[in-house]
Image (cartoon, rainbow, N blue to C red; front, side, top):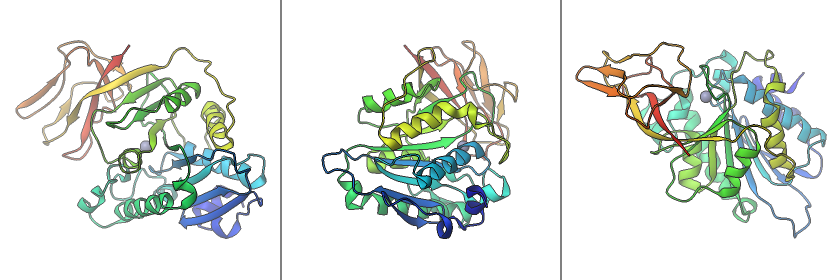
Length: 328
Ligand SMILES: [Zn+2]
């Protein structure tokens, strides 16, 4: 049976074996901690969290993680650093759905308490506890750099196919982390202007991790993804896991954006005045009324001319789009 099937049937834990250089521990279903064993004392150990499938229908990152896991188990990918691999929402993956009840990636930082008890609120609580446990491990506490990559695929088309969203943080963004993002050949980075309930925001805000949400392109159902389209991300992840520094940028300079405003749907009358299939990072002209509800309207004000994640069909109280400005 292949590893993906074993994961979905919850048989991976009893089946998967690792070489003696790797010490595995399962912290919860779909959550695997791997520590390198017997590295020379002088070697610098970092800590890396890679998560996929927080949205169950975003299959390509799950397949990528399975591929990396298989290489680690076979010994063809050396493990240099402490690694936590997380398959986020397994019940939603089995259903091929984004989520079963509510969006898991809005619930972190204790926000799950405000949602009805169910698959996602339980998983958010569990993943938060797992992260706490992981960061109390002596090996992790003793490590120098802490990074978290939460891998996603976008629902809609995008003017920049691959991009990273960096959570809002008051401390400086680590230069070597930004450099890695650049070297990974993604097209753009977006800096958030407020905290939120995403998984990457949680690890950044509560554990000072260099975190981001990576949107790596569009996904198809399990088994139909062409992983070659994401080979730059796979190579960059292999580099981090193995502690090698082999990647370098081949694409034109990375674009940088900052979130200026969030369009929040607060009423049933809410409307977005752009086509349903408007791509992420589309430029809108100054003065254009992009959204309206009851007695409120949003107009584009330069330089915040770029729209990200436009979606009028979100629940009341949730974000229906972000307005961005491009940084030079
Ligand atoms: Zn997602």
